[in-house]
Image (tube, rainbow, N blue to C red; front, side, top):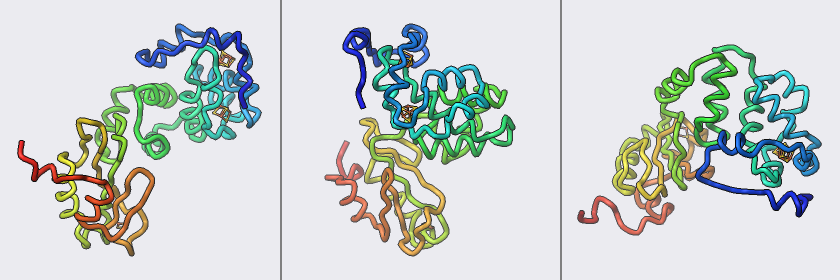
Length: 241
Ligand code: SF4
Ligand code: SF4
Ligand code: FES
């Protein structure tokens, strides 16, 4: 549903180089209620954002943050280009947890599984919520192989290192894939096309060895199938220079 006023759209400015904090500071909410009107869930996104910015997660719960489906319509229609969805997505996860430091790893894992990585803004919210330093959270996230502080490449290739896949050749497949892509495990290619990681069992052990590419799962993989699946024209290790 698009109800944006043509007059307000005049004010809509975008500058991709600016950080979210700069955008919010320079483009304050003007209480136009457009985000309220576009939300099919009947939520009031600017109020939820205010709750989350103030660390009032109990209020965000009362105001229905759990109903938000992360559709992004409110952000898309905000005439001030306020990235509401970034507050809402982290607020939705945090509002499910108590302010207990033991919740840090589950929170990080949930946000990571939903959003692919842990942006700086998300970490600041978590730090404030759990009363931990940003540095502490970053060091915890760096320690865990499955957590990322930078966005993955367009094709995020994960090779399962669970027991069934391990004994079906996952370690060899990992080395072969590293050579095919010209990157090591944990790295992203210079053109940002591929990120290569290994993951714990993805639950398709009968199909071992298994890989995932973004949200798709592929079984019974070998070097040639990976090459075909990823449409790799030539082996990086076979190309001179
Ligand atoms: S967040 Fe944007 S759309 Fe919502 S009330 Fe504020 S300015 Fe209007
Ligand atoms: S992102 Fe959430 S709050 Fe915003 S319009 Fe969608 S459901 Fe409503
Ligand atoms: S061990 Fe790889 S899918 Fe289970």
